[in-house]
Every structure is written in structure tokens, then in C-alpha cells.
Length: 106
Image (cartoon, rainbow, N blue to C red; front, side):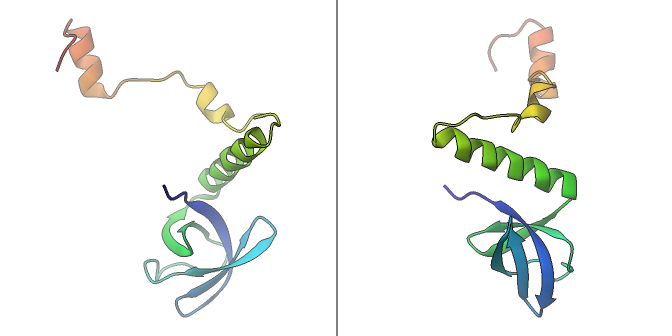
């Protein structure tokens, strides 16, 4: 499994993005994101940028990853998933319609 890491671009030089993963410098291949500019948040998979992210989404992903890292080391999860806890799970509309119609199978 590959996990995307949100990183903030510090500078762009052609297809090479110089970014920060927290406080750690990283280089990100921006071949798939020619529109990326310094200050943008990039979702990086194995050193390649795959998507531009709004800052609030990037920060939520970083918080979730930090919470999981803490949990794996025996620490607290904290509020890493606070945004999910405030919304109960919901079925996709087509499944909710089937449930409302009394159907229990596809």
C-alpha cells in the first residue's frame, strides 16, 4: 500500500519541486502537476506529486497521519480524526434509497 503525504512546495524548478514534509526537506517530481507553484500543497506518493490539495484538506491528512504514527508507538490518537467524529457515517445515496425502500440485498 502506498500512502500519500501532503507537502508544501517551497520552490519549483522545472519539474522538480522543493517541498517540506513537516520540517524535513523533500524533492517532489511535478511532472503530473505543471500548474504547481510555490506555496501549494501537493499530495506526494513515493516522491511524485499526484494532486494539488486545499490547505485545510492537507492539514487534516497530516493530522491523521501524525495520529496514526503516535498510536503505532503506543501514544494517544488525540484529535487526529475529529473531522470524521463530528459526522456520522452515511450510506451512498443509491444504497440509502434501497434501504428506505425495504431492500436488504442488491
